[in-house]
Amino acid sequence: MPYLVAADVSATPAGARFRDLLARPQILQLPGAYNGLSALQATAAEFDGLYLSGAALSAQMGLPDLGIMTIDDV
Image 1 (cartoon, rainbow, N blue to C red):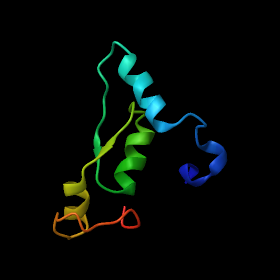
Image 2 (cartoon, helix red, strand yellow):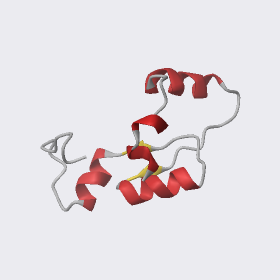
Image 3 (cartoon, rainbow, N blue to C red):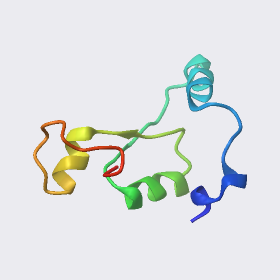
Image 4 (cartoon, one colour):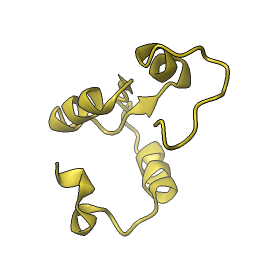
């Protein structure tokens, strides 16, 4: 999984990369990802980015959407 290799991580902060995408005149295609597999599929399809819904992630894990998940769960 190449996203786990530090050499493949961009040196530019994510916020700066997102601002650069927003500055483009094109419509951004940002599919929702609810787990690692869907994120890898979106990456393979070369989308501009993706978003993670907390409700979708908690539902996929069978947990209530009560804000009890931590970063370790994600």
